[in-house]
Image 1 (cartoon, rainbow, N blue to C red):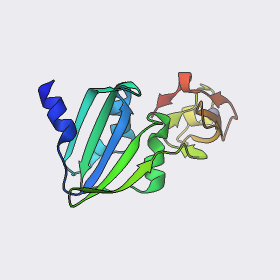
Image 2: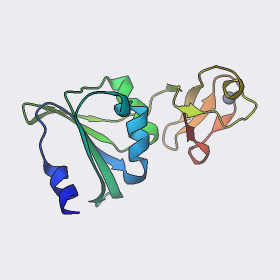
Image 3: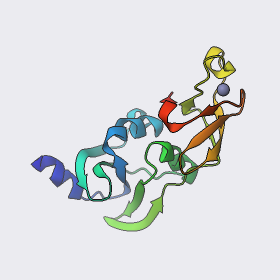
Image 4: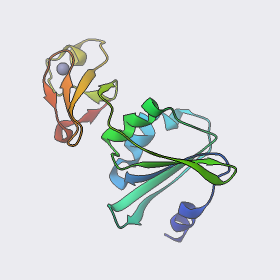
Length: 152
Ligand SMILES: [Zn+2]
């Protein structure tokens, strides 16, 4: 546990720190952002204590800066996530994640008969409720709620 505490305070030179990720969704965030496929140096800590959310995770990515729509993709699994943009060891910008109006290619439609589950069609949804994160399929119009969300 000592190492993880250490990790949470270590500074990075340039890059992005994503804080307040629910611990159980750390690996979903990594997958959604494609962090398993990039060459940046990445450190993460998980099961850190958080007064606000119980157990949280934090990811530090060196030399990586995200576009707003890129980062909003994680809103589904880490709605409280906070980003610190670091340049020369200083936090130069803070960003909050926002649930986008539309989502494509992250979540599976929960309707087994949906074209996206049977053909090579990328799922697309309109976000009908941002608070609870409720998605309406662009193709079959069925609702996928958070409880039934499966990630691609
Ligand atoms: Zn569908």
